Length: 317
Image 1 (spheres, rainbow, N blue to C red):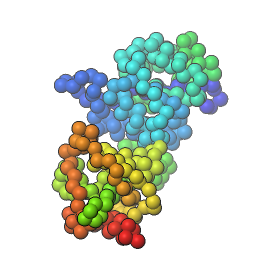
Image 2 (cartoon, rainbow, N blue to C red):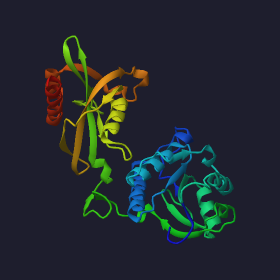
Image 3 (spheres, rainbow, N blue to C red):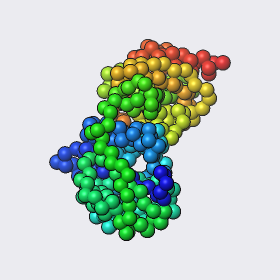
Image 4 (tube, rainbow, N blue to C red):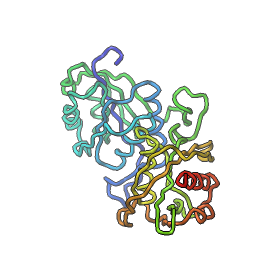
């Protein structure tokens, strides 16, 4: 902690959508806002400033900000607390929220809104700094967390995403290669969902996000989750299914996306529950149970065809 007691990271949410036509609590981040916040997360990881605990407003834009910051920094979101008091809070209210973290680990991050976050930085540091979207202030406090109420902080750093590198180091901080997205985007996992019916082995295929071809559930491996757990999460969201993901990998393949090569590893998933459309997040995709021959004929990528054949061979063995 650079020789001082505790640290507080104060982060204003990233650039948000226009407030028109949507409830304020539901406003999401713009695409540039998402990239800026991810740059902040990578910066925190590179400086070893990632928080031990994070508290966030329930607004969608602050939730997305917290999650993308932590994930880009290679950290999961298990230590994230949502506190309704942060929404539209004054600096005084924010100090009371943070007081609940008196026994928390040494570095806490608060993700909130203006004017409260700017007022909090000014109160703790004695410096009036307008906190632009995505800006982060790193403030040192004495060991006694009650210093929050005395304005006894020291502003250590101010991170403005507009001054950070536009591209992301790969495979992580210090990496020599630069890519369009954070490093974790380029490692993905998926499942080959299957069931045994009276007619034999069947696999489930789903429509791609734009319904241009048939695919299998897959997605970015979420920091904090194993490849298998992340794949099961994608299966629920994309295909509306739950099941058992176990056994060794069926293999992997690469494809080009975001200006670089993405590696995707697949696992078998025996399906035990098919959710109805009301419970299925991405029901617009559509889904079909087909036999192995139909699947290899209908799937768009050769890599997916290989995964289906590998599953059939394993189950026959």
